[in-house]
Image (cartoon, rainbow over all chains, first blue to last red; front, side, top):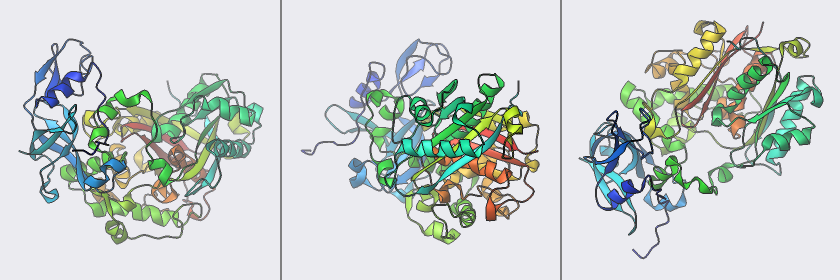
Length: 136
Length: 390
């Protein structure tokens, strides 16, 4: 791990910090609106369903389905070139919201839209972990 | 309220796309096409009292209207930057008409231009305090391939939901290439294509092949929107704005209600209702085509076929300029080239050119009505127009 991590890293704000902290601790934390009850992702200052600003952090199950995926065969950012072909995807969480992610630990030919997946916490640097998914 | 016949497009200009800038600057291109469009409309600089600019993608400069206006000697009373990505040009057309209808101005020149090439376009651009935009914080760490990967996600899900095939999408690229082969200005003029060619081109972002993806290049375009009074004494056939609609549903794909239905389902019906015309009356479709899937979903959401039936629809119809459903007769951006936001404007200029009977060997016969669609972001920003001649 002597090589520096060259890919873009999140720059958390006070609003989004609990999400990134959760990933580092191996937990998927998302917000829920105390008024309408809907789960929310990405983290916001107010609910985008009803604009209520009373939100709580909850632990999500980490289970979901593969909403859609693509296999990137040419990297736009050179830092990803060594990874091609890699899977760029959207996962729909069991709680409702969708997240942009990578699918890992899955042969490309086994990928199917709507297949069940579960969260993987990829600690890419000592400070940052990314939310990825693998077949459930 | 309506914008029906509030204004007309008279003058147009378009620079022939080229793979690289060849010494041209973005400002240079914008003033060149603006000048030609104003002259085409038969106006002088001081008769132009409105100026709308589509912001160049590779040159983020504050106050573009001031730079362009000063260079051309235009002193606009109505000016703005219309920042809707690929929907900017269609968005400019109705904004100009609304400003004219409100009495703010009488003649608006709408301008786009880009001095760029594939390398410049895809080079990582310095962006200062935007790190905390959600699309950066929650997408960039996962390695998107620009917007290519977003459209690929849409195409993949559309295949899953509706059984759409790559062969069906490829038909769109092939018919548009046939059109480009009748347009000497197209970047891919003289290079006919088959469905097998498209399917044999490398997969870039599954399921999209290289020949389903636009090529960034250098170019520019402009059009002039004028009041009915000016339109009636124009040297060109006035092309009337009959209907317009717009809708935006965000930018970050994970936040959409559905990635396979676009807000064209809102913008297009709005435009059709304003114009009071039916789909069967439309003789030309000039619709944004950054990727093949963009056209397919546009046909569905604009109501030319049922949702999910776009694949079968493009197989059943001949989309060439001699076909039963002429679509993107200039070749579309897939074959004409994508010079920044001027790519989106090419759908407006081609519709005007066709309606004014100035399309040369690719002229569509007996044309009275055209449907134009501008698409920005990742199918999330939509502006639809109905244009017509008397």
